[in-house]
Length: 187
Image (tube, rainbow, N blue to C red; front, side, top):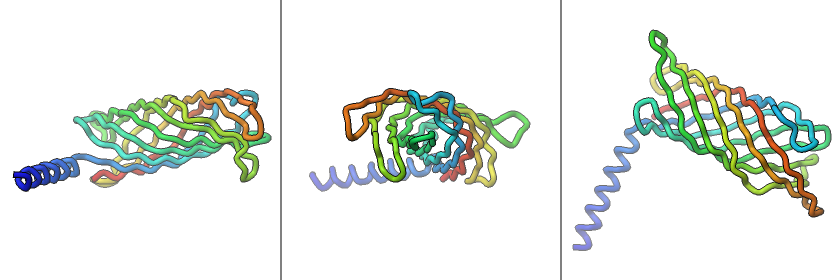
């Protein structure tokens, strides 16, 4: 009896895994230029650069869920601010009638932290905090499995940074527009 249950469970797992792989998965990589929209406490941040990677799954026509990891770097007069973390969200992709491309709208919750660096040394760090992200873009198919997605995203994170050598804490908002282009592989 135990062997039959194990066999049935194995068949069900393989059937589910095979059907899940047959669905629409997408892997994306995105370099970006970040335009700050607020100072972090008293630090005036310069515009920065960023990179993210995502995995998305099509749950129904035109609707994906996704998760990903991102990195952004912003310089100021004295320090570099580095933000890293995760995003979890959903996006709506719909063809534009009469066109060969689609539009995209997305919303995500983020779970990120901020490091303050002086040279190669981390002088302050924050715990991970919840934030949010909204975006819009266009999906241009290059082949049946490859697309380029230029997009604009707004990111907002409120974080409290604690300096290592003291009990000094500063709270600030890291808000910025992200202009980039995803390279997306569908399988």
